[in-house]
Length: 297
Ligand code: NAD
Image 1: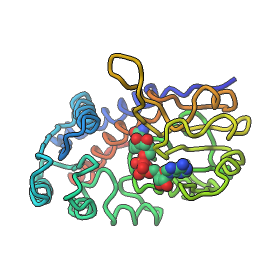
Image 2: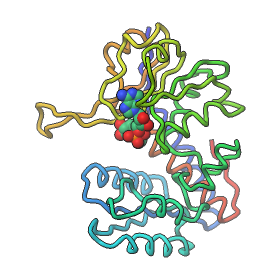
Image 3: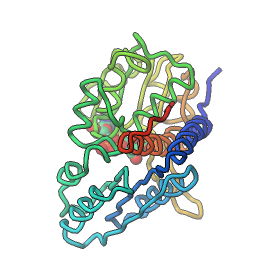
Image 4: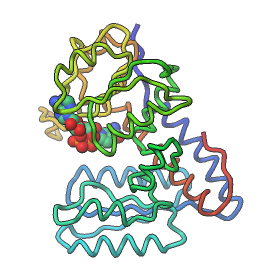
């Protein structure tokens, strides 16, 4: 019997809990504020940002959306970040990635006030995460941790394989899994594009977390019976439908589900958690900056 994990239901619960925290902040006159900055013409990025702003509106977070033309000089973006750093109504700042090639991504990440860095990508926040003292856990890996907990998957002592070593998913995911405490204590392997015999690694895992950005690259033949499979991938592939594309994960769902004890679908798996955890971090940011304590889940 394979459990198909309902990411929407898990995210709804977290959003409800976070919404209780916004009520608590409101009773002390604090409205959490999230600024999103988009410097891109990419349709997918526009969609992601508008989903984030919509989620803000639904749970009592004030959204401030900024758009900068993709061909403007990089300084426009750096200056905008400085303004937002100084704005007391803004507790969290999110610059939607990717930024244009002429913008230095590292400068962007390092310009954001670490207290407002709700993505958790500033070197100070990365360092805190690695040291086991996270301020803002990056949203997608944090969401995966929440999925595992809500599904009753014990990570302690388990063999976890993370496929992908990006700064936003793979590396922080592995870091969370090796921390002491709940949702951690896993023996964790990071695989990437140069890994030899990937299938051997994934077959030996109790938990596989796929974040490679390669459509359906992990199939049932690469898994053992009873594996927990978390599919972070969101890939657009051509399809014979109105849109001309469909979204698929990094896992071949049909064959993987035959082996998995639990598996996330795409869409409806990890994606909703990423947005819920952004709300979580924004409320945490407002709490830390205002000094009003909240009881986040
Ligand atoms: P990325 O391109 O930055 O990193 C991909 C990683 O996968 C790289 O480290 C690379 O070494 C590894 N990789 C690539 N091909 C591989 C292969 N054949 N075998 C093993 N490893 C391989 O991507 P990312 O930003 O980490 O995103 C990964 C995927 O997750 C993408 O599909 C992205 O759209 C998706 N994503 C989803 C969410 C969400 O909310 N669900 C959030 C972020 C990213």
